[in-house]
Image 1: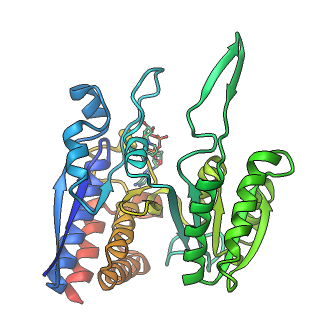
Image 2: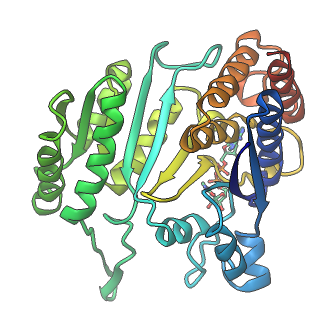
Length: 341
Ligand code: NAD
């Protein structure tokens, strides 16, 4: 039997609830096929780890992660005081060089969507740009943040995005602000155009970030893969998530060449913790991406169609989708579909 060792970091707030549900769905899928096994190893990370160990990702969690092929990460509260340790997500991205943040946005059955046929994926550069964490106050009241853009990182993320576009509808849009940020986005754009020569079947088109923010509202159905730098990607991927139903259904992957981390896009929503109320689909979709990553594509499809059926029926929807179901009731409805197939 194929076996995959996968790390699970449940996080805090609503994290443990949505992760437990996603794990139940993963277990039901394994039982349904009997062809592979996920060896799920739980680890501590996040705000509770800071209280215990003074760091978001303690050394024993790092050692554990290194023994796994991928990680499912629940949402974690991030302290904002100056001097607080960097977030667990940031630490893990750096540690495993997870340079591409991948955010699919797909119109879902029975979920309000700006257009009925949106199917796009945003690939965001995950290691540099305005998130390089180089920021200082040059004189009192004057702050400067460095936007680092390198040819190497731009080429790497562009190649990742082109490969993805090549497997999909063969359209790649790159997003920048090179009319103002001439040097940094000049480097990014040139890297994209150079990599485009390796993919002659993929159509390429560039957009300014402000125009893309507008086009995503005007004609989101016309986009396939969108690649951009860190901050622009952060902003438009939340915009795109809202086009197709919002945080309760949005999942993301952090991909490197040898490791990947999957997570719901939403945070720890502390006010809903322990209430069995929030939507677990974002975390379930994160697991779907994980299954695709490890190569268990049939289970990924089964997970998706069971979730789609529950959405279509509309009987077990959580509050954010206009229903009254508890998280556990939505989970049970999805499990029932999986068991029946
Ligand atoms: P949040 O995503 O936790 O919650 C914002 C609102 O979105 C909630 O009040 C709720 O109305 C809704 N929501 C979120 N998840 C939902 C779900 N699964 N189902 C239904 N509704 C849902 O954002 P926030 O309040 O800005 O952040 C809370 C904490 O989470 C902060 O400490 C923040 O830093 C952290 N955070 C962590 C991650 C992560 O770990 N990946 C991401 C974003 C925010």
